[in-house]
Image (cartoon, rainbow, N blue to C red; front, side):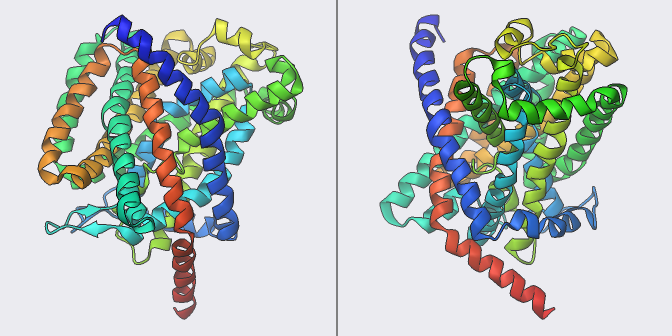
Length: 471
C-alpha cells in the first residue's frame, strides 16, 4: 500500500475510531452490561459459584471428539483463547501509560458488568444456533440478530456484522497478532520474522484443515498451559516485589479517583482519561459485548443454555481479573513504585520513555533481567497470539459460511494464511486502525440484538431455575 493512500486513509480511520470508542461504544457496552446485570438480578454474583463449579468441577484437558460441536470446557477454552491475546499484555500497558494506574480500577468495573453481558451472549448463541446436514454447529450474533430483527433490517444488520468480523478478526486481526509474534521473537531471539511466518502458516493450516474438532483439541490443552506459564512468571515477579504490593494496590485505587496527580491537567480531564482508557481497554480485552466469543459458546454440548452462560462468565473473570490484572500488577509494582524507572512519572512523560509495546518486557526485565524478561514475554505472546489466531479464524469462518455457503470456507482459510504470513513481514498503523475500526463496528449490531432479545434471556434463566428446582 502506497504511503499516499495510507496518508489519506489513516486519519479517516483514526477519527472514526476516536468517535466510536470515546462516545458510542463505551455507552453501548457499559449500557448493555448494566442493563443485563439488573435484568438478571446480577447473575454474575448469584451464579458465579455455579459457573466455577461447572468449569472446574470435572475439568479434563482431553474432552475428546464430540459428535457435533464441543464440550463445555472446549468451548470455554476457545473463547478464552480469543479473549486472552496481545490485548492483555499490550492493552493493559497502554491503559496504564495513558490513563495511569487508576485505569485498572475502571477495567475491573467494566469487566464486572461485562460478565452479565457475556452470559446473555452465550445464552442467545445456544438458543438460536443451527446444525447443518453434516452435523456442523453454526451459531453466533448473525443468528440471534436475525431472530431479533425480521425482514430486511435483520438481514442488513446480520450481514453488516458478518462482514465486519471477517475483516476485523479473520483477516486483519490475525495479521496483527502474527506481527506481534514475529516482532517479539525477532527482538528476543534474533529469528527473522519471515521464518516465524512460515512456521505459523504451516501449523495454522494443519489446524484449520482439521476443522472444529482439531481446534477444540488444541485449545483445550494450549489455554491452560499458556495461563500457567504466565501466572507462574507473574507471581514470581510479585513475590520478588512483595513489599511494594500495598503501594501497588494503593495506586490503583488512589489514581482511579485522583488521576490528575499522575496524568496532569485538571481533575475533569484526568478522570475522563482514566475512565475512558480503563473502559476501552477493558471492553476489548474481555470482548464482552463485541460478539466474538458467542461463536465458541454456541458449540457447547450442554443440557441447557444457562449452563454455558455461567461458564462464559468465568471466561471474563479469568481474562480480566486474573491474567490482565496480574500483568497490570507486575507493571505497576516494578515500574511505578519508588525505585522503579517511572516512579512519580506522569503518563505523558512515561509514554516518551517507554511505549506500550515494550512496557511488559521492561517490567518483567526489572526482576528477571533484560534478556530473560524479553524472552519470557515473547514466549507468552506466542501462546496468547497464536491461540487468538486459531479462535478468530473459526469465528470468521462461521460468518463466511453464513454469507457465502460452506464451499467458500477453504478460500477463506487460504486468504487468512496469506494475511498471517504478511503480518510477520511488516505491519503499519493503517492495518491496526482498520482492525480497530471493524472491531468497533461489530459492537453496534451485536448490542442492538442483545437489547432486543432481553425477554428470551430472562425466559431461558427462568426455565433453568425451574429445571433445577425439579431435580
